[in-house]
Length: 162
Ligand SMILES: [Zn+2]
Image (tube, rainbow, N blue to C red; front, side, top):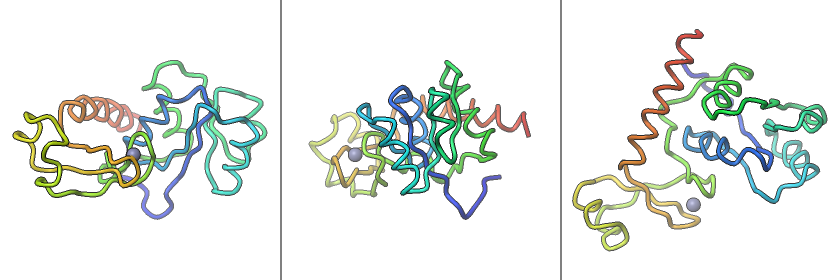
């Protein structure tokens, strides 16, 4: 289903923070800062070969490769990106990146997160990941279930299209 090989990377404009977060959840390398200036976005896109995602038509036109996002809902935005670039979500890559830092999280032994996560989380989960940058700890918890539902929704829509 998913295209192997080239991994598409993104840079999002300041208006698309939620979309950026969700693209990271889905495993896409996505740069975002609420302080990004247009020129900076274009420079990053050029230097790092990233697709610009923007609500600004002018910025989209200036970029070599861009997807102009005028959709309001997150679902529609994600669909637009996937459809426009003809890419699919790689299930194996979901939740492999820190939502805040965009770096790949690493597996960490359960014993090492003791005291660092709520005790009920520690009791009920065996698998944990840590962001090497911000040290945030991830586990397949409630958030993950919500995400899983959203991901299903998105991929169902995708399948229907294909
Ligand atoms: Zn992080």
